[in-house]
Length: 145
Image (tube, rainbow, N blue to C red; front, side, top):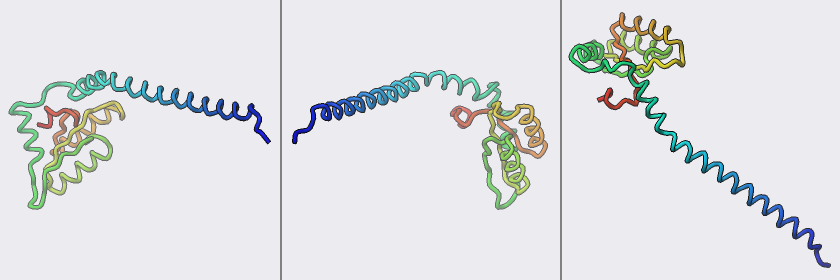
Protein backbone atom coordinates (compact mmCIF):
# COMPACT_ATOMS: atom_id res chain seq x y z
CA UNK A 1 0.00 0.00 0.00
CA UNK A 2 1.36 3.39 -0.96
CA UNK A 3 1.58 6.31 1.41
CA UNK A 4 -0.43 9.34 0.71
CA UNK A 5 1.54 12.28 -0.76
CA UNK A 6 -0.05 14.48 1.88
CA UNK A 7 1.87 12.81 4.74
CA UNK A 8 5.18 13.39 3.00
CA UNK A 9 4.26 17.03 2.42
CA UNK A 10 3.34 17.51 6.08
CA UNK A 11 6.68 16.08 7.28
CA UNK A 12 8.61 18.31 4.90
CA UNK A 13 6.54 21.27 5.97
CA UNK A 14 7.29 20.71 9.68
CA UNK A 15 10.99 20.21 8.91
CA UNK A 16 10.98 23.45 6.93
CA UNK A 17 9.31 25.27 9.83
CA UNK A 18 11.83 23.87 12.30
CA UNK A 19 14.71 24.94 10.06
CA UNK A 20 13.22 28.38 9.53
CA UNK A 21 12.64 29.06 13.24
CA UNK A 22 16.09 27.70 14.11
CA UNK A 23 17.67 30.20 11.73
CA UNK A 24 15.53 33.01 13.13
CA UNK A 25 16.58 32.08 16.66
CA UNK A 26 20.27 31.90 15.72
CA UNK A 27 19.97 35.22 13.89
CA UNK A 28 18.54 36.87 17.00
CA UNK A 29 21.34 35.45 19.13
CA UNK A 30 23.98 36.76 16.72
CA UNK A 31 22.29 40.16 16.55
CA UNK A 32 22.23 40.37 20.34
CA UNK A 33 25.86 39.25 20.57
CA UNK A 34 27.16 41.75 18.02
CA UNK A 35 25.04 44.54 19.44
CA UNK A 36 26.45 43.93 22.92
CA UNK A 37 30.01 43.98 21.52
CA UNK A 38 29.46 47.31 19.78
CA UNK A 39 28.08 48.88 22.97
CA UNK A 40 31.27 48.21 24.92
CA UNK A 41 32.44 51.82 24.64
CA UNK A 42 29.73 53.17 27.01
CA UNK A 43 30.74 50.51 29.51
CA UNK A 44 34.35 51.64 29.48
CA UNK A 45 33.30 55.27 29.78
CA UNK A 46 31.08 54.25 32.71
CA UNK A 47 34.04 52.50 34.34
CA UNK A 48 36.18 55.59 33.87
CA UNK A 49 33.43 57.77 35.28
CA UNK A 50 33.01 55.75 38.43
CA UNK A 51 36.57 54.51 38.83
CA UNK A 52 37.49 57.55 40.88
CA UNK A 53 35.12 60.38 41.60
CA UNK A 54 38.10 62.65 42.10
CA UNK A 55 41.58 62.01 40.84
CA UNK A 56 42.96 62.61 44.30
CA UNK A 57 45.12 59.52 44.49
CA UNK A 58 48.85 59.69 44.36
CA UNK A 59 51.22 62.13 45.91
CA UNK A 60 53.20 61.94 49.14
CA UNK A 61 50.30 62.58 51.54
CA UNK A 62 48.13 59.93 49.89
CA UNK A 63 50.96 57.39 49.88
CA UNK A 64 51.65 58.07 53.57
CA UNK A 65 48.00 57.37 54.45
CA UNK A 66 48.04 54.16 52.40
CA UNK A 67 51.30 52.95 53.97
CA UNK A 68 50.14 53.81 57.50
CA UNK A 69 46.88 51.94 57.00
CA UNK A 70 48.61 48.90 55.48
CA UNK A 71 51.32 48.73 58.18
CA UNK A 72 51.40 45.36 59.93
CA UNK A 73 51.05 45.62 63.73
CA UNK A 74 51.58 41.99 64.81
CA UNK A 75 54.34 39.43 64.30
CA UNK A 76 52.20 37.02 62.31
CA UNK A 77 50.13 39.68 60.56
CA UNK A 78 49.88 40.32 56.87
CA UNK A 79 48.84 43.28 54.79
CA UNK A 80 45.47 42.89 53.04
CA UNK A 81 43.41 44.80 50.50
CA UNK A 82 39.70 44.61 51.26
CA UNK A 83 37.51 45.36 48.26
CA UNK A 84 34.01 46.60 48.97
CA UNK A 85 35.39 47.77 52.29
CA UNK A 86 32.49 50.04 53.24
CA UNK A 87 29.82 47.48 52.50
CA UNK A 88 28.27 45.49 55.32
CA UNK A 89 30.63 42.51 55.09
CA UNK A 90 33.67 44.56 54.10
CA UNK A 91 33.33 46.83 57.13
CA UNK A 92 33.26 43.90 59.54
CA UNK A 93 36.12 42.11 57.78
CA UNK A 94 38.27 45.25 57.75
CA UNK A 95 37.66 45.96 61.43
CA UNK A 96 38.36 42.34 62.41
CA UNK A 97 41.60 42.25 60.42
CA UNK A 98 42.73 45.52 62.00
CA UNK A 99 41.98 44.19 65.51
CA UNK A 100 44.16 41.15 64.71
CA UNK A 101 47.07 43.44 63.87
CA UNK A 102 46.90 43.08 60.11
CA UNK A 103 47.69 45.94 57.80
CA UNK A 104 44.39 46.80 56.13
CA UNK A 105 43.74 48.99 53.11
CA UNK A 106 40.14 49.36 51.99
CA UNK A 107 38.93 49.91 48.43
CA UNK A 108 35.38 50.85 47.47
CA UNK A 109 33.81 52.65 44.52
CA UNK A 110 30.91 54.06 46.58
CA UNK A 111 28.33 53.09 43.98
CA UNK A 112 24.65 53.50 44.76
CA UNK A 113 23.85 49.82 45.26
CA UNK A 114 23.53 50.70 48.95
CA UNK A 115 22.83 54.14 50.37
CA UNK A 116 26.03 56.21 49.86
CA UNK A 117 25.48 58.09 53.14
CA UNK A 118 25.56 54.76 54.97
CA UNK A 119 28.82 53.94 53.19
CA UNK A 120 30.28 57.32 54.18
CA UNK A 121 29.36 56.66 57.81
CA UNK A 122 31.09 53.28 57.64
CA UNK A 123 34.11 54.95 56.04
CA UNK A 124 34.35 57.36 58.99
CA UNK A 125 34.03 54.43 61.41
CA UNK A 126 36.85 52.54 59.70
CA UNK A 127 39.06 55.62 59.51
CA UNK A 128 38.76 55.95 63.31
CA UNK A 129 40.07 52.38 63.65
CA UNK A 130 43.02 53.15 61.37
CA UNK A 131 41.75 51.71 58.09
CA UNK A 132 42.15 54.06 55.13
CA UNK A 133 39.53 53.67 52.41
CA UNK A 134 40.60 54.45 48.86
CA UNK A 135 37.70 55.60 46.73
CA UNK A 136 38.21 53.76 43.47
CA UNK A 137 37.34 50.81 41.32
CA UNK A 138 39.16 47.49 41.30
CA UNK A 139 39.20 47.70 37.48
CA UNK A 140 41.31 50.89 37.52
CA UNK A 141 44.80 49.70 36.58
CA UNK A 142 46.43 53.08 37.29
CA UNK A 143 45.10 53.07 40.83
CA UNK A 144 46.28 49.54 41.57
CA UNK A 145 49.78 50.22 40.26
